[in-house]
Image (cartoon, rainbow, N blue to C red; front, top):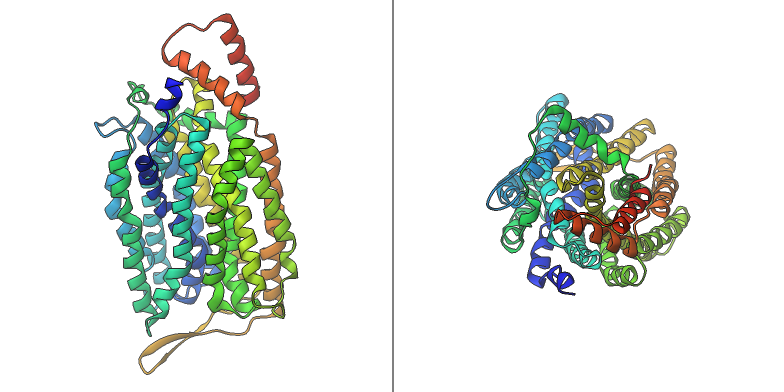
Length: 488
């Protein structure tokens, strides 16, 4: 009981840690919702060319995200392994966000493309520098199975609240300015501060485990490559990675396509941010329900419930038409929000358990490596969604708005879209998400870690951390756990 009590976190620590995901949740929401639209309809880059911005940045992320995880694991300072990067990232968060939303107006499209490519790579690198250590910190703050769910629930509360704000507020800021350029610049400054300043609280209220900062092993290229390859040998990690990738790929696709769906199919584009606000509000409302469900059953069961509800809701989405009652889309958004709440909360509750399984496999604490891979997958899902949708609508014959300047005020005049574009939007909004969610659900069913298994795992790891010899009974227990959690 005394050991369990030491794993309980104060409300101050939970809230301080949770504030850090204002950036992670809000930034990915803005990118998923508005960035492709910003590139095609404000900066006026061809959709296929805009998709290349994200594709190229992912090539860099494939190296930088896992590398940052390795750097974080090997960092040794008085402030810890993770917290120094949270402090250092504050200024870069602001600068990178401002640069990526600066509406450049070069005459040549290629010049606009190059500027936005550099800006997005800067933004993506900053997320890597901050979010990889931040995510890794969640595994260190507590080792308790349910306390990690509590920590993640508070984190997702702030993340979803930020997402809700970022779904509604940015466009409202832009709308208040006659010139869209001034609106986007003001939005970039305001939201950049909103993302960066909370990390002061996160840095001050969290504390890292000294026992995890053991003497680091000599670095070699072989050791670095092994650190990136070994996780894929662990069955539990692969299951969770696939759950994460396909769940957020679905979410990012919906976030990216919804503004086109609302604008060109339902012809209610000005309501997009309000529908998303309703979705995210119900995502917040669902958090206590899924936290309670996970305590009574398991994180896996709560994740499955959310996934199944989400699949059911998307099955009805193709029936939504412009002739339906205006409130229909809001009701749909609320129900989808309640379903996705379970998926988001539980996947972030499951993450911190994976480094424990790796410790059983490798004998090391490599949170940074794992969360580097997770961070890469999060950004990859967003990039894949945007790249896929941008090319799909380009092939279907999407017509970008025409830029007009009247009395010194710049406006974008939308053009009518073909039936091929409308059909493409409807399929992307309904059919494709169901396929992705079924893959996600399949991997969830195969994920083996339960509360009982985690308690047995903690017992084994506790003995091994104290350098004590395992009894014959514990050796047999260790062998069984490796078979279940790691696989042959």
